[in-house]
Every structure is written in structure tokens, then in C-alpha cells.
Length: 112
Ligand SMILES: [Zn+2]
Image 1 (cartoon, protein in one colour):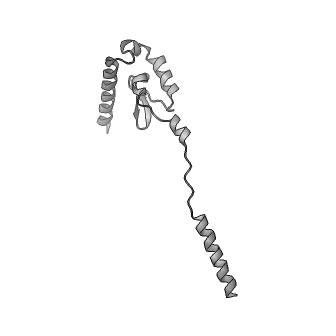
Image 2: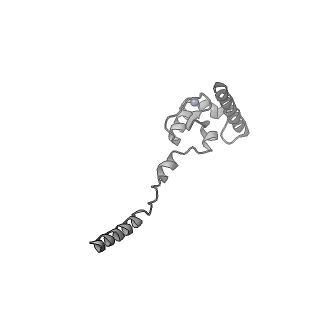
Image 3: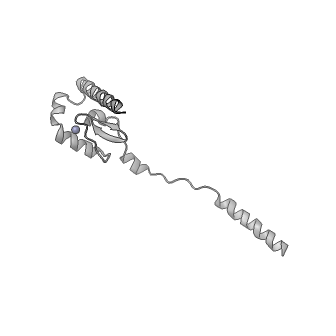
């Protein structure tokens, strides 16, 4: 009787030691890449991240889904003139976007 019990426990121990090897957490690389704010979007579409949401720097309209096409669509349909006054790739655009971002950050700190 004793022998049987001991062998049972040693078998059980072997099983649990095998099971205890933790499996790696699943990686969600694809979805994370699609939902990441790309730094160049700030200059391309005049958006910035505010509380993990993309916010238009010109009209401060938040976009619920972080996707490039959504930012692009908003910018081209709502702020077509912006690209004419501040063409992409110019210093004036960089300065304008930087000042818009600063004013947005200033507003947010006032409300806190
Ligand atoms: Zn806007």
C-alpha cells in the first residue's frame, strides 16, 4: 500500500513540474502596429496624441480610432487650406505645428 502511494506522488510531482513551465504571453504585434501613433503624422496631418487619442491640432477634434486613414481624411476634408498656407516639408509648417501643440498643452494644463 505504501509503495503504491509513493510512486503515485512521484509521478504527480513529475507531471506538475512539466506543467509549471509557463507559456509565453501571446503577442499582438499586428494590431499594435496598426494602432500606433506615428510621429510623422504630427507634421503630415497636424495631429497629436492627447490621453492616448489622436487630436487634431487645428480644431482640437478627437479621432476615436487611431488609424492613418482617419487622420488623413479629417485633415484633407476639414483643413484643406492649411496645406496651402503651411506646405508639407517647410519650416513654417514645423513652427506652426509646434506652436499649435504648445497652445494645446497649455490649455490642458489650465484645466487640471
Ligand atoms: Zn481638425
